[in-house]
Picture 1 (cartoon, rainbow, N blue to C red):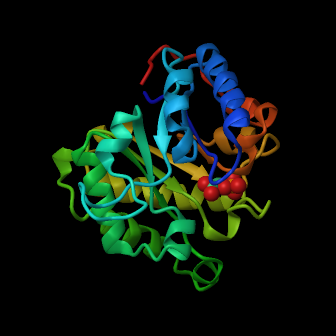
Picture 2 (picture 1 turned 135 degrees about the horizontal axis):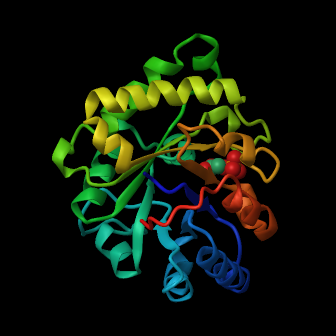
Picture 3 (picture 1 turned 90 degrees about the horizontal axis):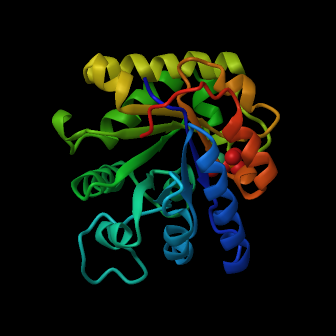
Length: 258
Ligand code: PGA
């Protein structure tokens, strides 16, 4: 049985004082719930996050990783550096990076591989555009994105993996996917993963999250869906009261910690 996992993507927001305060509150929250929390701050706050979250049960995640081990890549951060800062997770393939930083399928596959090779758990983001949904291409596009992103890692390399289904049109728009859309799409993703890997792995080690305008208002309904193992939260993760409600929504009293 998997605990629900809520990942906060702070994106390029907050300053050192505000992020410090938010880390402290998230650390307190993590101690009081069975939900697994993963906080992904801007890279400059990772080290503070590592100190503040230590011992709380919450995990630290990075928002990006370079696909190379080391070298002349000005401005980039390696998987080893993220591990040094205490990261356990890393977001890969977020639609903002795909669209604004030209990350293509090959780069994303390399990032997934370097993360796994360095014992970082990828939070692999996938999601269709509005046009793809209108054209009925959602399912085929998502299964394609999963296959291409995981093309460089063998089945037995996958010990833990997070897949975040984030429809591009729902990110930061206040227009979350409907419960029916989430249910249908999640089942495509879970069925595809079960065909690709063993049922046991999907049941225990792969979390499939929903992301895209998750708020304190819609979280209960979304997290009540059996196939939704948690959420990736952007905007609402910056407001602690909203984030707390999301983390506490639909929490089953489970003892298993990740
Ligand atoms: P949002 O962002 O919750 O603000 O829609 C989600 C994300 O980008 O991961």
